[in-house]
Length: 125
Image (cartoon, rainbow, N blue to C red; front, top):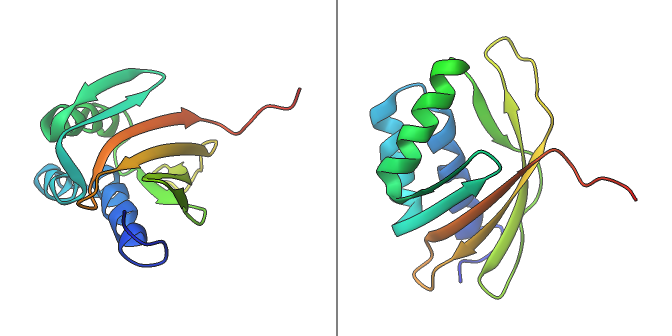
């Protein structure tokens, strides 16, 4: 597994660039660099597999929110090939939407093979 504060930080930040770059071709390059072949992405609105399906989903998000960026807003916690990190979607005008968290499975080769995202923070009981 990739190391925290080194290759794993770079991997996750590259993945976030895949959500943030305004150029669709560059978004696909960032996703291709971060994701393992056949990687899956799941959040409350979608489940996709592979770079192209995820990129198409992100294209749709960009169409609704041009100029948005996804920023990592936490340290990365990792163990046993799994990691989690907090993120925030910031709209083009600087308005921040509620934070979310992604859980990531990292391949032995150091690429993302599964992402499960949640919107908002944990709710108290």
